[in-house]
Each structure stands twice: as structure tokens, then as C-alpha cells.
Image 1 (cartoon, helix red, strand yellow):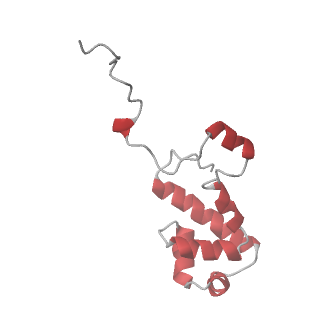
Image 2: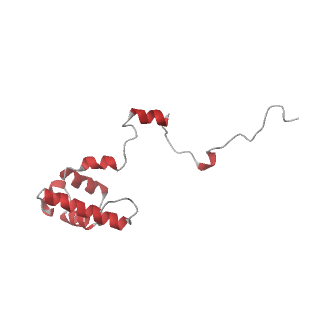
Image 3: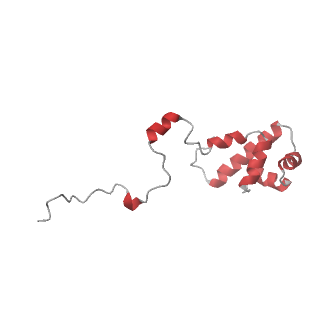
Amino acid sequence: MRIEGKESENRIMQEFGKRMAKYRIALQKTQEELAEEAGVSRGTITRMEKGESVQFDNLIKVMKVLNICANLDMLVPDMNDDPSDLLKLGNQRQRATAKRYRNKKAHGWKWGEDR
């Protein structure tokens, strides 16, 4: 199944869990071995592979052992990877502007109109 983001969170987590299990099996590791190497409980591995919620730090630990942690970079790409992207963006933003201030134009007042 290809994850496109239109699926329910539950369905995405189940697919993610299946993929994690496939990686573990491809490396010929049992759940116990993976749990020990990652420093998490076997129950965490079981929950993860069932598509249940687990703590993000435990997910990272498991992904490191499975040698797929670099894939996390695709989740939220670094905005500074390509210098040409910075030229397109201009100055790098530090925070978002509140909606009430966006596209606010002058009220049309001109010098000398106060007479």
C-alpha cells in the first residue's frame, strides 16, 4: 500500500507497523533481539508492528537498529539543503505572521488630503 496521506491515521500506523516487521524479518531478527538492541521492551516492538501508538524516541531507537533512521529526513525535509531554494525564499522566516497583519495595505491617505 502506498501512503498518500488521505488514509486514516489508524490505517497509516498499521501500514507502518507492517513495514517495520518486514525490515526486522529481512534482517533475521526476532522481536526480542530487536528490542534488546534498541533498548526498548518487546511489548514496544509488538505494539509498533501492530500499528499501535509508541513513543517517538522508541521509534527512533528501533529505526537506528534497522538502519533506516536516515529515512526520517524525508518526513520533514531541511529547508537549507539547496542553496537555490534560499534564493527563491528570500530572507529566512523566523516565525509566521498573524493573519490580521497579512496583506494589510495603507488606507489610501495621501499628503494634503486633510484639508
